[in-house]
Image 1 (cartoon, rainbow, N blue to C red):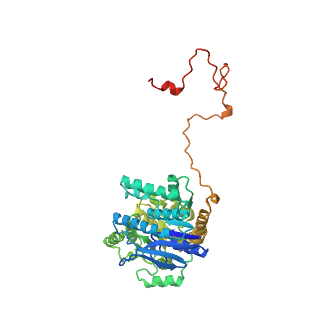
Image 2: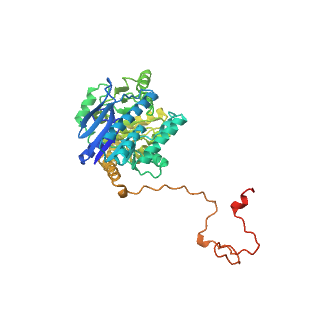
Image 3: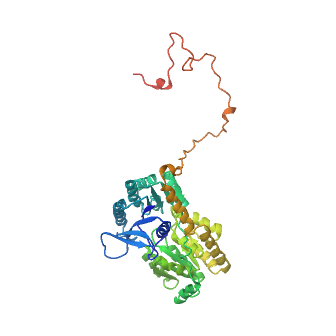
Length: 468
């Protein structure tokens, strides 16, 4: 099968960012499929026009340089989304395709996906990584009613035209089916790359020894985006209290994003920077394993907004892959997993002093740490391994590529039940029959025959109609 795979922000292991698309695409190639990835090159440097093609382990990747950064204004980012939408539509339309797959964000990637699928008469599969426009609306980032309406229409357009939708969390799936109840939706979360995060103990020891500020001290690590949704200043505030309770604890923040400088400034103003809190610019995915291998505990944060609980953050699954306990400051399905298995800590979403106390209590509890590491490893192997979840992913693509007649039926929309009165309903058979009139019925209508000179009875409509 020839698959056109559209992902605006595709990364391979040599780049900083999630590698879900790379891992899925290379496994599709290993199964004998041909995969063309259409993406952007956002690396800093002078802009060059035109497409560049590379080979990533058998994946043919088509790159077009479209500048993008979380530091850009909202309008400038929208322009980047629109630019890629047009470029990707033109490129995808020229490629052979038995199936077209597009993964958000941004939501605009659905447009080239649907266009290419229509032109090639191929099925379209859409992947939802963040629930738009619901999350931006809840965050207050999308206030204009017209913009909200357009974003909602675009989401409906994507779901309506998809043979199937893949959602990265149960909450995202619920959001899809709330809009389009008949859209077949499958939950396939992010995955744990267990082999990638298997590092040698000696390499971890050398990493710790290289950094005098670390040595054998407890270490909390945060890796990933420092964007508006993450609220990583939470960790800095907790670190201020942790220093009072246990001055030897260290915090390492590795990442990039719009909130990098404000977070760094807060750490500096608090007297924590380069003493308790250390910040490194983003690193390639291939360098994360040794960092997480050196961590006592990893972490994942979002701002206290309910819609953000449905995330499927890579950092959560990277921690599981590295067999490291994970601390989160939000509820939802990941928090439920942690409570169910003991693979980490669920912190108060706003009380950073309480979070600090809980972290200090567990960072030196060797028995708890051992049990949490084992629980994280079990989750990685038994529920979230990349190979396990890829089998589900491949199944979605392969059944979507079947002729229409062979595909499983779409789920039927459930019409909400009409509210009933409070009195209990009696079975039909138990209800007494209505008394019938003794008059004989007319031959066709069931009414009694009219006597000569009698006026016909009016219907309800006729009785209510005004006189002319």
